[in-house]
Amino acid sequence: MAYSSLATQKNKRSFLDPRVKIVLVLLLAIFVMGGVGGARMKDISFVLSIIPFVLLLIEQQWEKFWHASIMLIIGYVCLLVMPYLPSTIKPIALMCGYILTRFVATVAMGNYVIATTSVSEFIAAMEKIHMPRAIIVPMSVMFRMFPTIATEWKSICRAMNMREIHIGAVGIGKILEYQLIPMISSSVRIGEELSAAALIRGLGSPIKRTNICQIGFRIQDWFLLLISLSVICFWLLCSLGVIV
Image (tube, rainbow, N blue to C red):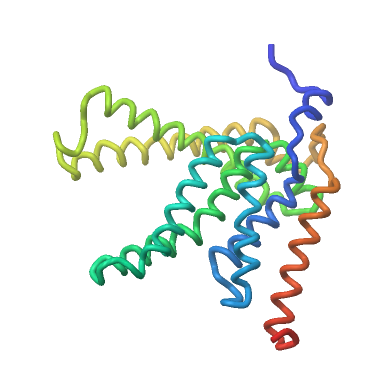
C-alpha cells in the first residue's frame, strides 16, 4: 500500500524550490518569449533560454529535454538558412524560426515545473508566500489537469490508429471531429473530477492544512534568484538610460 512519509518526501524533493521555478517561468515569459528589452537583452535572453534545458538534464527528464532541444535546433536552423532560401519561402522560415526560438525555452520551463512539482509542494510554496486560497485551489487543480489531458490525448490518438482512422481515409474534417469532440468532453469530465478531488482533500476548507513537504531555499535556489534579480536590475538600468 502506497503511503507518504517525511522520508519519502525528502527523497522526492525537487532540485529547485517551487517559488524559484515560478520566478523562472515568469522571467522566461517576459524576456525570452516576450522579447522585452529588445537587442540589449538579446545575449541575456539566450543565456536564460539555456536554463530550462540544464534543469531538465539535472532532473533526468530525458524525453522532454530531447523534444525541446530538437525544436530549438530546428528554429535556429530556420533562421540560419533563411537568407539563402527563395523569396517565397523566406517568410515561412523566418516565422517558424522566430516562433520556435522564442517559445520553446519557455514551454520547456513550464514542462519542467509541471513534471517536477507535486501538488503538495506547490500548495506549500504558495502558502509560504501567503497567496490567497482562491488562487491556490484553481492553480493546484490545473497542475494535475495538464498532464491528465495530455494522457487523454495520447489515448484518443492510439484509439484512432487502432481503427485506422487517418486523414487519407476520412479527411481532415472528420479527423478534427473524432479528436476534438472526445477531447472536449474528456476535459470537462477531468476538470470536474479534479475539482471534486481537491475539495475532498480539504483544499477549500478555511482551516489551515498541515503539510509534510520539505520546501525551502538552498544554494541553487539562491543562485538562480540572484541571476533573476541581476537580469531585472540590468533591464531597469537599460530602460532608465543608465546603461547605454
